[in-house]
Image 1 (cartoon, rainbow, N blue to C red):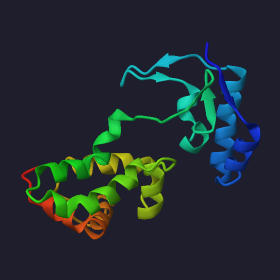
Image 2 (image 1 turned 120 degrees about the horizontal axis):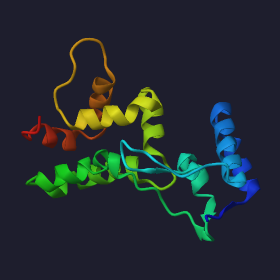
Image 3 (image 1 turned 90 degrees about the horizontal axis):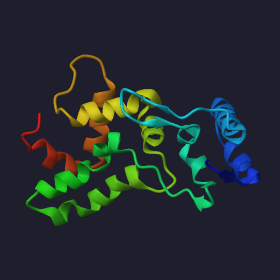
Length: 177
């Protein structure tokens, strides 16, 4: 039996800064939690157990307590390799010190507390939120970009090259394809 609590005033203040559709969705999930109108269900495809709390936006989760304990963080192992890309590049480099500043800057994109990286990158790059995770994973699993019109992969590549030129150059030297 779970007990998920929150201060209504904090939730309202947070939701007021959301687009209307996200605000409505957030409140609908909170109602499910409050009224305990859900069944725990295992997802056969990935083995995860579905619970409405997992569907709440991260900025709402951090305002909640679960069984009296403050919510700390969400760990999404399924998409962790975009967040450790810079760590990998530094680990294979012969000149680690020169990459340190960019490594820290890149880590902030994915690991800054209170920032949901997929939403941040989606807004920054103009790639649909529903596509960004797929773009990150597919992009980092190959270095060749689709030919033709400007694809989300090319947009991400251009951003990576511009914002993290030293890491990007070092990564492009690897034999990963």
